[in-house]
Length: 102
Image (tube, one colour):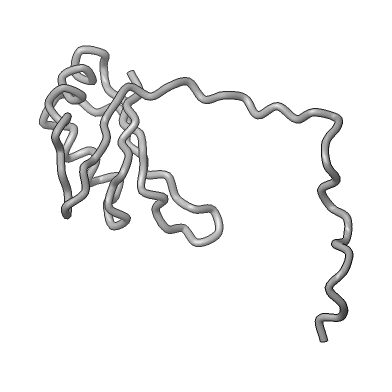
């Protein structure tokens, strides 16, 4: 089962997640989502565990707090597909008005 872990301190690493969740069973994988451009944490991540271990972790970490932040731990929802429609407001044109930038 995939577990969503939100409101993490930005200093939290994948190893920190593995260590915390290993108290509840075997961790298959742990990841902290990072910004593509800066490489810094976005403050959330995912942990994969067996269903029994995951349910135990979700219950056991319901009131988990780190650095004064209430960390949210829940079953991850399936990722939604991004759908692009063929219509919509223009995306790449020049903006009108405003005069010269120089």
